Length: 269
Ligand SMILES: C[S@@+](CC[C@H](N)C(=O)[O-])C[C@H]1O[C@@H](n2cnc3c(N)ncnc32)[C@H](O)[C@@H]1O
Image (tube, rainbow, N blue to C red):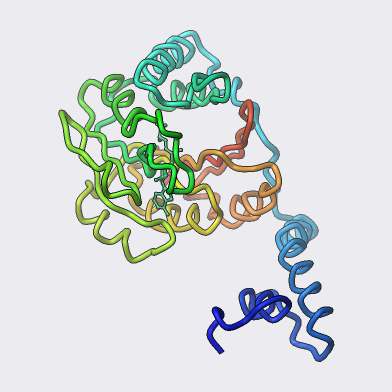
C-alpha cells in the first residue's frame, strides 16, 4: 500500500522497513520497536566495531589544526573574507556562526589549490531547508574561497536553482543531495580532481553520504573532503564511517568545533 494511505503505527513500520522487526505483534509495539532500532543501530554498530578491534575516532579540537603561525594567519585572512562576504563559517551571523576558518586555514594554507567544490550556496529562500534566512547572501563562502585562493576555480552546487550564478572563477550547478543520480550531471561539469570538497548543504546523514560517495573518488592526492555541521547526536554514524574507510587510502578525523562537529577525510593514496 502507498505510504500516503498509511497513518500512525503502520506509517512508521512501512516508512522504515530497514529497522522494523520481522516479527508478529501489535502494530503499536512493532512501531515502537522500529523507532528504538533506528536509534540504537549506529551506537550498537560502533560498539561492535570497537569490540572487534577497530580504532574509534575521538574528536580533535578544531584549534589544534591551526598549529603554526602560517596556518593561524591563513585562518584569520579567511575569517575576514567569510565575514565580509556574509558566510557564517567564521563566527558572523549575529554570534550564531562557526569557527571553521581554523580548519580551512590549515587545509588551504599554501593557497595553491586549483579546484574547490562546495555543496550549499546559502539560499535566502526560507522555503528551503537549511536556508540562511531572508538576508542570506547566496554564494558568500564561494566568493571567500575564490578571493583567498588566487588561482583556484571554485564550484558550487545547490538544490535552489534560482540562486545559481557564474562570475569570475566561480561556476555553480544544480544538485539534490537526496537524489544521488543528480551528482552525475554535477560530476560532468566539475574537474575530475579537486583539492577540497565541502558539504554545507542539507546536513542530514543520507545527504552527507551521497556527497562522500561522489566526492571521495574525485579528491586529488592529499585533497580533503569536509562534512560540516554534524550534530553531537549523530556522531556515532560518523565514527562508524571513519572506522569503515580503508586507512591506507583515507585518513578520517572527527573535528570538534564551537557549535558542531565536522568530518574530515584526507586522501592518502
Ligand atoms: C547553510 S546553507 C550554505 C551556506 C554557504 N555555504 C555559506 O557558507 O555561505 C545550505 C544550503 O544547502 C542547500 N540545500 C538544502 N537541501 C539541499 C539538497 N537536498 N541538495 C543540495 N543542496 C541543498 C540550501 O538550499 C542552502 O542553500
